Length: 316
Picture 1 (cartoon, rainbow, N blue to C red):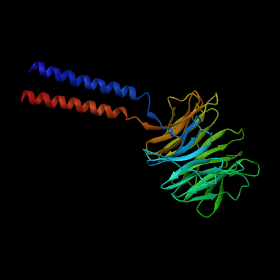
Picture 2: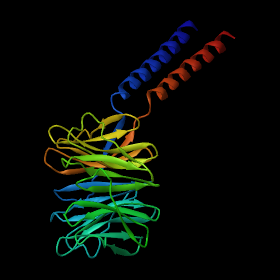
Picture 3: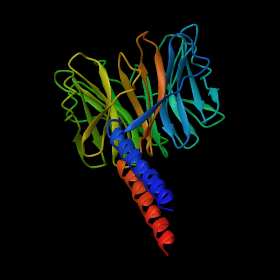
């Protein structure tokens, strides 16, 4: 009897030790990265550019180095190209069943569009004689940027009937609106040195978010989900690294990245984007949060509790 009890004690202690070790390792990386590449991609690769719920959107570069849009539902890739995009289609965002982005026409000029599961609709900013880049959508509000008369980026919003110019007052050299989440608009502006500075706007207040000490050459905000912000920063070597911000900055890089990590969106706890490997090929990725160490600690406590119950039964 004593031998059997001792074996159970050793087994439970080993379980607790293993879980504790696992928890310690989890601290080293907050997210697990999974590579997701479109099988139709040629040597150029895959760029994941957005996510809404379980639907992912992006771009793949085919064997002719043409940019093609796609959607991914968790099991299958579906091509999605604007018929007017003779020089490529870039999908940038999704909200519900509506997809937005831009295509390049025969003159290689970017034209914005929406797609509602059956129909493509071209949307060009009438306040610009140049290209229109639609980058995000939330409900009925569409956002993006175009060019002003000085060829600098100018943001806009579109409410279904009218375009409204929209610029960060600190963006003396332009504003890039990268997306919208609920009523919060986000992106980056170019300061007097043409350095990109991340910002959010909640309907009344602009907040600059450029405090990442590693992003000495700029910050881009690319996605928001509740209180979590994601994007990219440019370091002293002008290499891009991903980050996640939830009160504090954390660098988040794809382990296979050699020439940069680009985070482009977040939905719930799932982050998406793409990286560039040593062959300068784009690789799409999905990054999911690793469970907190406290989760494993609770499992360990449960194992100890089970052991105590077993010992009481033996002595009863």
